[in-house]
Length: 274
Image 1: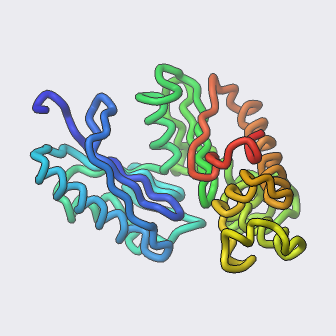
Image 2 (image 1 turned 180 degrees about the vertical axis):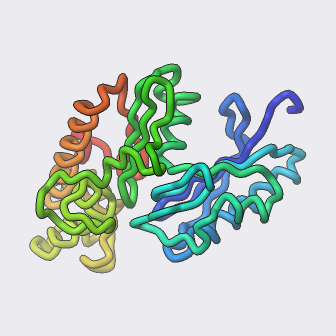
């Protein structure tokens, strides 16, 4: 154990905040997860960081640093959130807040940036130098490695393909634009389309998994689609078509060696990705 360097990694999504104690060879030693409070994202990060530090101490593990991948636009140089369409961070200076609580060095970056670097270092894109990562959850986040370097841009908001427009004049996105990829293919977009579909088709099995049409989640849609519910499969097919448009645009702009898909919504499988 002494020859391994250990860090805590925390990933903040729209529904869940997940963390792990990880070695410098990519081995996951401990895991933790809390539901994300959409009105207090930083509070959840602090709670999970403290929990994992305490568990590591109990297990005799020495933690050297903490890394946070946060949904939103991140200034990695200051460790702060500058804009987040799907979450409110009660303290935008996340790195400073976490460091003050656990007394360890802290780095913060956009969650998809952190994810793509993880895939290049340890995962599905290991060893590749030109990689795109698309995280499809509540929202859609993207990260890019170009010629072996992480792409951040001038302010840390580079290549946010979830907020590129795929339908001019389309539904309003939470970022304030209309017709973004996120507004057409993300978890919350699927929920919007599914609720409309259930109103039109009250016999849909999507309603077997939810208390009402207004309560349908993307997970309910995926479950119904696996049962070959026509309305659910049509919703996922429509969202998937827009995802395909977004991926095509990524290929044409970046010419990556591979695109890695992640996030809970990607697990909807063939009805969405087919």
